Image 1 (spheres, rainbow, N blue to C red):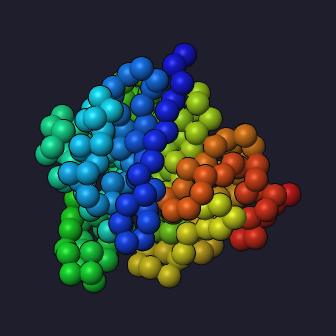
Image 2: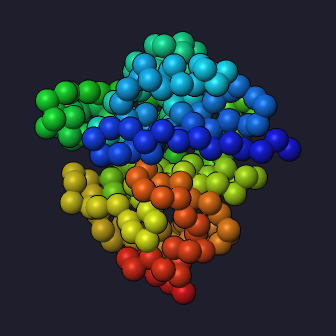
Length: 213
């Protein structure tokens, strides 16, 4: 089995982690939460011989999606995936806060996913985990065979996503983390929307917001 390669570009005013995933030696690529600078992302991946076939949106805040439409146009055959309950943010500039920064932006997902859905892109396979709390329709993407979780703004290194934005819910966020993400193997690598990577085991032991060990 080819190794899953996880690349990262830190982009935008909020220093978002914009991940690109592909199997070693293969060109089919998943782009996660492209925050900005579509041309830069396109050129960087093209130089690496990679072709984006899917864009995964973990949630609908502006800083996680404002290069999406442009990348879809640049790469061509691209499918956009997002949580089924997140359209309220994706399609409303006020709700996703893009209007607040003077750059109204909306996207329409090609595929709306729900809990336990499985997605295949090239030889990559992942499972959708609905994790409401940071927003009502936020999702994480779990690459089971590779032990990799893309957590968006649900779970950070020793922290969690804020819940004071529209549709946020602190209780729902803790439930999502403890009852869903903490059920994954401790060695699962966690790649969050901001900041450093971590593991499920580390967060269970040291995350002050959701420590269960």
